[in-house]
Image (tube, rainbow, N blue to C red):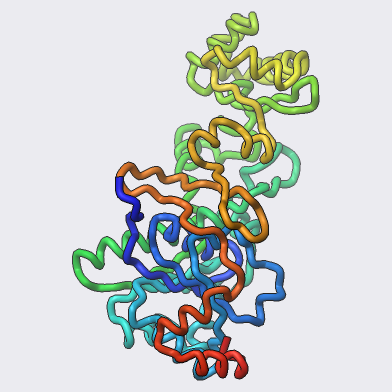
Length: 382
């Protein structure tokens, strides 16, 4: 097993902020890429700097609106492999750091932009957040209970999957292509595009049933007892996913209701069966159900809180919750690397950096003297 990550030797300059872009560059950093996050010092007081996303990275502050700030940026571009940005379309052009300008310095650069609605189309200039992208893509309409407004997910699906993960995937594909052709390319990532891409199973359900899936009324969303959530005696919940008949049969036999085995997807008795299961699950606590059903092959698991999940052996033993040594502030434990590579595994090499922590070191690496660096600080370049 190598100690270096799969992306060792790749340098990423990340101009993005908030969640999607920094999440993408965290994935790359976890797998060995050198990531230099670049932000304007004006944003330091916004209190939107999330240390959890800045492990394994370097961070420098840089004013791209200054002449010398642009000079520093293009020096970084000379040896960079990837540029990542998350501004609205047109902002990087106004700043003079768009892909067309960067290609002049580094023809092999891979330039990735993450936006809400993409670089083209009627919504390209529209502002938005996770809930808006899910709404536009038809995803939000499928989340929640029937006959009630859609429920906003408690995690940022569009930001993380539609933006961050798709951007990382696009960058890896472009790096692979460059290895074969020597050519860089531009990547246009839209979080609303990524949200729409979540719908293939819903399309399948629609084509199979001939009806458009409705919130809380399709196979995988509360319509049937076999795929549902149930409140326990202590006010917690169990999640049942017994879609396949064998799992449903095992649970029905265990609960002594064999008459429901052939009625798994019965429309006539659907509500009756759901009500029966609701009553049964209210008879015991979550802990009691967890203990009782652990030997029953029926796809029924407790709905854990975040704190419970972080403490659970499932994720501890999988190195998905790991301690951080040398962390100066914030969490003393980090979420691990979900992509497990056998020969070049990703890992946490260094704790989160502070805002602008590596500015001086990076500038020295670019050839600036200590006197020049101090003068640049006084002039507001960083």
